[in-house]
Amino acid sequence: MRDIYHDLVPLHSIYPASHSGAKTGDVIIDLQGFLGALIICYSGAITTDTVFQLMEGNESDLSDAAAVADADLLGSEPTLLAATDNEVKSFGYIGKKRYIRVDTTAGAGIAGALVVKGLPRHKPAVS
Image (cartoon, rainbow, N blue to C red):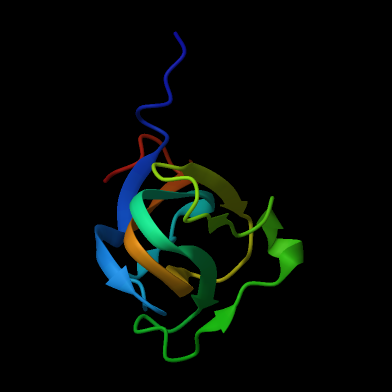
């Protein structure tokens, strides 16, 4: 039987809400027990291009937050365009840090980001 339900844990990092300008993500994601993550960025109606940035660190409050190096990404951090409402784009994280958070560096309108933890060290994964 094929089963990904027990291998993936989806969590919000940016709640879907109206925002303006740069935004620190709402939730820090703990990747302990997982070897990677899929980040899904999405928008409703936006009036200014929304630029996403993934941050990483080993402190639970991300006081050591730094932008993720391109070598630790699969694909690239997306920009959702104001000219194209209701977009969905994704990229992957394969870095070694324990905590990640999705931020925006610019944008205005309704947007959000999900992190789907994957490649669990132990199965089934617990949400």
